Length: 179
Image (cartoon, rainbow, N blue to C red; front, side, top):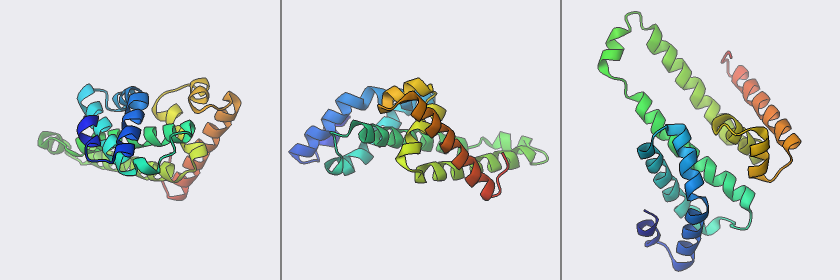
């Protein structure tokens, strides 16, 4: 996968992309698989993520591991979420017909709206809060694992996760979504 994509890049960018793939590809695949829960969708998410990364590879600072890791995992998480969103948006016709009062369809639509708004809020958060929240809430990492991954102190990460969750909850309440 990476070879055919890298063929369209300049030599330096090709080497940078191959380095990123070798160093982070397996962990990105694992992150995508945790979200999509199957290999096929995880592979698609990884591929889509590297297509996006390849477009910005020249501007990435490979020496800042924390920022690079945060960016890569945000991209692959978003691609995995996009795949799930597309899959969830395709409801079998029988499921729609069975909802006699429409309550289930309305509930699912409201949940999807809340989810999409929450994703927007998280995407707008400063990386200081976004990365720990993502690793903890989406990836299921403990505070200690998140701290190790980001190279931060565990106590700091706990505070950042708590603040990120509060920011998210406050923004959702401001928008009229009840939690």
